[in-house]
Length: 124
Image 1 (cartoon, helix red, strand yellow):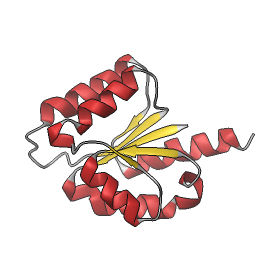
Image 2: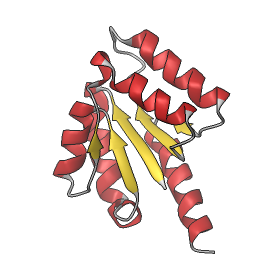
Image 3: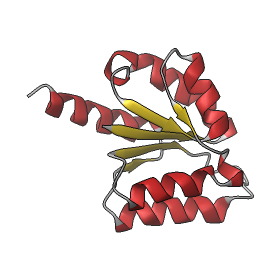
Image 4: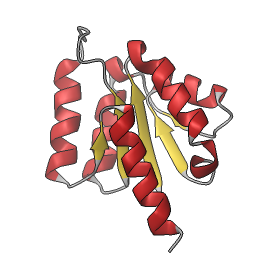
């Protein structure tokens, strides 16, 4: 099981809170994150593979993992009100997830539903 984690700068506190709340569920799961987000993930005590920062290719790397079916889900804490110079990469990542049927959560509520559903499925 591998989950990708991405968070725009304005959403990193929400992402950290989410990870801390779900640490027991995530500690045995392989995590991958864009570069800066990965530093925040590490600060929660979880192990994470850090890729490039989103604006310099990290979003594209996660899209590639999605296209290769190497991810079970993507948790992308997006800031829909902020301007992002790498918005085309963000749109590409979301499109790739849709094309390859990879669940993608773009807010904490949806991320919680995905994690809870996966966790209950694993406990069966």
